Image (cartoon, rainbow, N blue to C red; front, side, top):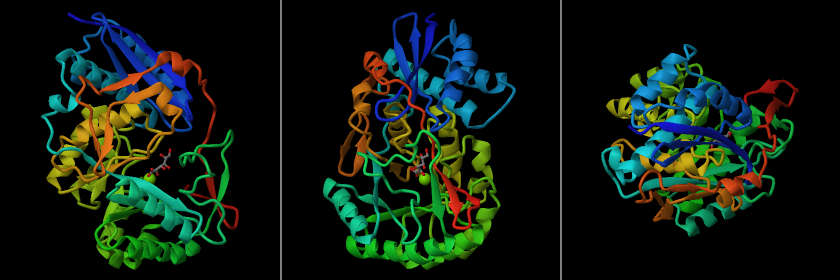
Length: 403
Ligand code: GCO
Ligand code: MG
């Protein structure tokens, strides 16, 4: 029997921080997992190094379900982003190994392709409407069929979604959390207007998405959803903080604007009522924060029963390893909706070389065995960990708001 001989955690910062798990088997097969939890990276690195890696050595890498249950039930303490990201990294690395051993891409092990590729949406943003429209046009020129639009709000400095002129937008870009301003009245006034300008520019059928980023109460979110109904958004994302699943019933009952939720949730239990009571349209849990392919597939399968579609988180804080895993899963599930795709920066690709490619508005998985992603460990050493935090939002009166 093949056994796991080594499990190694690599923390590196090629343009931004990533925590990567490398599992090696007695047959010399290597599998890669992503354990990145933006702004809390070292907590997961320690969870893996100190509490998980020692348990992996000697185990059969083929027993993915058993290892998943062993780590989840065996910890006694369940769920939560740190635990579920750590388990996800192990799970994804084991799927990578299984594919390499079988000589098949992971999507074949998951039942085979149900579509040619995963349609993705890109992130267009601008400090004001003209800048936003230029950025939207850039994505359309590159071949995107779906675009997320975020713009600055006049009178409110530093809202979510705007870069600081870097190669890609990365909200975790300060050694200590940056404090950004927030005004719900300005947002409710200005956002529908800039979204209307985008809809006007792109015509009626290109998919238009928007991330509210947890900023509204359920009632405010219902009002927002109504005010953009005629713009036919593909979705409004995270309209209200997701902990209160019941809050979505109020939004749901008052607007037909589709709702997407889940990037900060990490288990099937966190989305259970959202799905079974059809309070949302898209579930955004990710392969790297929701327990890996094994657990995310369960969430997607549950969602299928209730006509909820998938729309996984895919910001650049998910490494190319988890994006590869996401695309392999996306092309197999019947209820796929869309995949978020923020292309990684050039430096990131000095360490990670993914096999997926962008074509016809989709990410198409590689046909190589496993996940088809290579990781250059020597290159990773050139980019040591660089502490970075996500921002904090404050209302104009100085009180803390959901970021
Ligand atoms: C998105 C997300 C991200 C998050 C980021 C936090 O929809 O892409 O909201 O931009 O803010 O992943 O680490
Ligand atoms: Mg989001």
